[in-house]
Image 1 (spheres, rainbow, N blue to C red):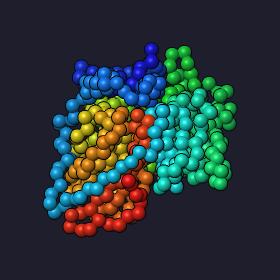
Image 2: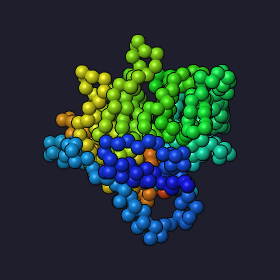
Image 3: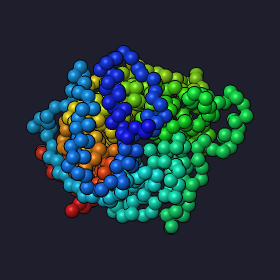
Image 4: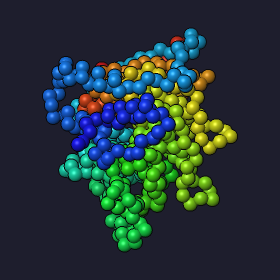
Length: 445
């Protein structure tokens, strides 16, 4: 029986945490792993676009019951801005587009904004928000799009069917996207299918090549020409960007579905899972493969989102326990140590992005919170973006003013929700002791 929502995994994690804090449950059946917010909304999308009061009440009650308390044992990093360092926040927003199906992922590359809804990707101009084209519309067999990443002149999309698709921008004048490869590639499979040693057990009485994902590919990251993918099959795989060949696979990277991946500029890999853990992977010079460096265990339930700052010294993690944990790299070690938590959301954290000194968190409580990091390392919640009718699934920075947000500036953000609404926000920050810097990023009405 198909589970309807990502809320179910959160509730099971909560029950496990409460009843057996030291016991990690094994992965659930395939039907359980193939459920998430997108599948929940796919079923609800066939109903009327305007929800009835009873359904809203039921959904709100369900989310409230499944939300764990924030982590009281971890000190909060949030504080109110002090007068000498206070900011004036000017906020404006407008709807960009409305889709019949939930928005599962947003990405920006070059002049384009990519919006994934179910199996289709729509392309917009990132400044004017005019619709340009779309691709993958005919291929409904691929399942919903879970992630988007970019190589030079190529676009990577990960899908519910366990595959990664590679697209080329064929004609810039016609804005045509052409499918050039599907990972694992045919050549890669032909090289390996004969030898029995290349097969691994994915479930009882079923084997696949180790280069194949056995479930939805939930996250993608690209760094220094390498592609990193994670899946609900609990694995982490590394692909070579030049020929799209799978060069490494960690079969059991976690004890449960892997939901997120982030890679620092130095090549350190972070994976977040429904087993409530964040694992750190690195490839020492003497090693040919990535090895487990550390396991970060502070969350009480499934980890849904990860984000790194520019130099990789800070890691942010969001989970179903409603907390955003902040981890800082220790100079004497190759891993992160938690330094505090950001609290305020009423439901699970689903997405995170970090730009300059701003952290944005999207939640199942239908809001986006904007946090600013001060010079002393503490965070202030500058504003709450409200307007979505369902959980906020993805966030992306569209553009930002030059210079650090610490001194004021303007940043434009897009948020995508399971209500199918794509919204654009302009956030202007000005220090009360200095004038607001000029910006021509976006004029919002």
